[in-house]
Image (tube, rainbow, N blue to C red):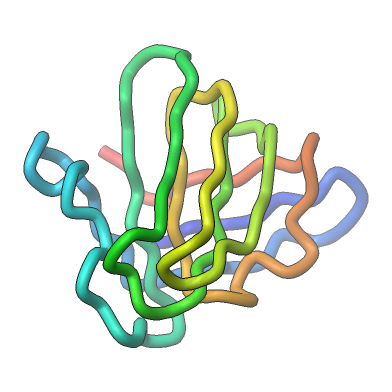
Amino acid sequence: MRLVHEPADGDPRTLATDVERADSLLKKVKGLMGKSSLPDGYALVFDFGRTGYRDVHMLFVRTPLDVVWLRDEEVVQVKTLRPWRGTGVAKADRFVELPGGAADGVEPGDRVVLDGEA
């Protein structure tokens, strides 16, 4: 499975090939807390099944993250969060955490899809 950015006015590009899902309550609560680095090509996907306000905090996360909030695979917000202090919130049904800088060029209105999603 890979995470693909489909810009509104350009060619698709792969954001991540090492995609993990936060598929339990414990994984969603823990997220990337305690991580001091992330490999290139890594993404952690949080699925919620329905749209709501989804917040992200950086408490105990020791590396910058790019967070992409999605609604029906459409990007609604992209934000780079600083270690320990960053926060963000958007109305979405899914969000993705990536290493800082990995979502450069991803803009609201673009699409981000999981290629090979079951």
